[in-house]
Length: 318
Image (cartoon, rainbow, N blue to C red; front, side, top):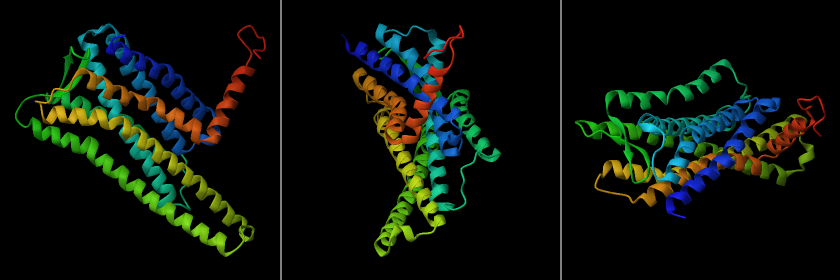
């Protein structure tokens, strides 16, 4: 089997795992009332983003790479690359929002933040889906960004147009789309980490100083909530770390090729970094299934409900 066919096999595996995995996450959070809080709503929205990325980007790459030729026409090649850029920005904004949600719950307003999906928070969630349209469409409208078919890897790749000011536009785009969100994510999660460490130290001191059962019910409820928040913060940190580990190889390759055009990466490097990037689409369902007991229980409950539903002939399916 040639190397492109090996890559196509891995991409097909991501579809096979990622599509049902992210769909299960999405449906489970929608059907389970206790998950109707912002941290889970954001995770459901992120699952939808990964689901659409697999359908609109990855699925078109599988057959073309396997056949070593783009099979869907020039327009779809451009759209495929545009969708890839859109969902990349969309995912970063989701990570910023998830980090900010944990920051509110643990650092800024630990006693008052309830995570309820208010109208204002729903608007912010809508903006996560709207904002990525701006850099994708504006760059093409200005002619700063072009999508050029690369016959070595059998799909279109983003390239900055060679014109006056293109380097400045590229640097501004790099700072606005990647560097600033990354710094925000780091700041928020470092703040959460420091607060969590202080809380753990305080709880240890309380336990050492006296028996836990002397605490009032209110204190026990606060301690239980803080434990849940800390676990959620660890989950968010794992999700963010997984994303950036998957993203960095392709990002380094892309930035290097844009700023140093003389660098010509072999197709194998492009394929491998792309494969690592798409691996992120299956990470989140795996993380949820391992880290979240309540999510596993909700999934089992959902499948029991499906099996208990009568089939189309009115017979019990169990």
